[in-house]
Image (cartoon, rainbow, N blue to C red; front, side, top):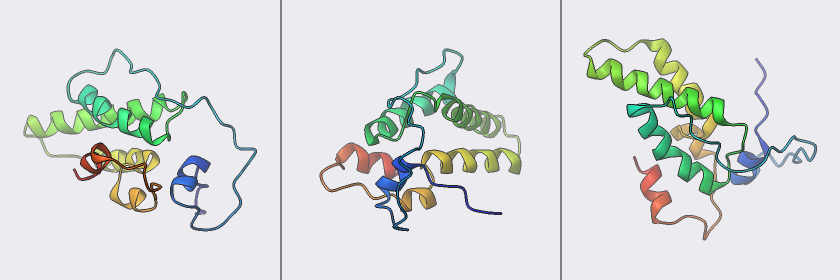
Length: 131
């Protein structure tokens, strides 16, 4: 299976390690965080509130990223509810969360590919990524 192309915003944050030219024809939706859906509740909403401000500050979110953010947060909420209920975790849920996290740059492996230019990181960024 071929590797999927890396979005330009993430490629720029990573410092373009492959030195491949940027796709200047890549569709660029309006930057900024999408609106939080009113149906997110509990731990899913807490996850949205935890990750979206920082992802927005890093400049990787656009107006069309709502679905993957919602799916990540809903899956996270489902995992927390499962654990709180004392039920065994399903591998499929963990796989889904891993996939969404990678898409959003939230996993350790995907984050290791990113380089934040000097002066862009602050105490809040360090705190966010240290968890």
